[in-house]
Length: 295
Image (cartoon, rainbow, N blue to C red; front, side, top):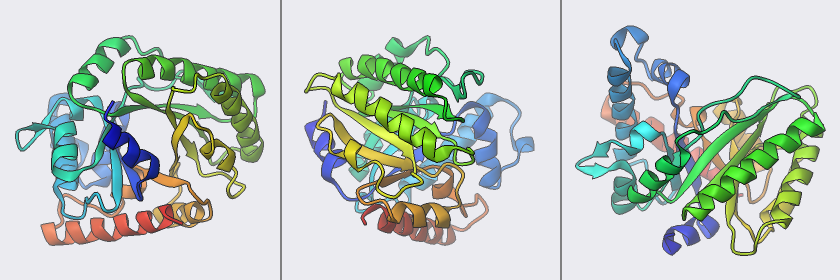
């Protein structure tokens, strides 16, 4: 584990850029960027285009460690290069931005008001490759749709069980039990979720470190207690479908909570933009998310 990266994630100012759209979400991410599905005929062409998009973002002068602490990559991005360097190496060596890897394989069907993670069949091999590629940590997502105590407990138990496996490989897991922002009982779900997370944190050995990625809570500063746990490196927030402006406004009311935005980060970027327009749009976006993250 890289202690310089660990210290940066624990106490640095800024946010985490989520560049990890994968699988079924990739065509949507490309469409948002102005590249339609008729522009590619197979997965290889699609992933080449999305790597070009991510490379343009990462290489932009606006993508600066002054504002960005880390970046979450998709497996295909980790296995590609930027200017002759593996993407994770480029992020750290050229930008001083800490690299993470999305490791989950998507969501299982809805049951007990939640969607657990699908089994990650190649996890050990993937983690070994991530260590070889100098990745610092990982991210994995589940979704909570209803305030179902049994379902939420299952989500948290699964997340922490896989998280321990990841930590034992020398990586810091980002545990992401997302609460659907459109849930009719979002506040109650968050109450149950926090209690289940606290139970798991209290059961960890003192040397185990995790990060948490959570939906922006309905009650401001609701996750302060989680931030004070000695096992928690950082608590970060997903945008969850809010517009960037709305997500930033909500985030700014939660002290100590920093952004880990995906769609809200790339909002307004287009393949058709000149480099100047692209970089200026990204600059304003990054500054706005940064400002909301340092309140």
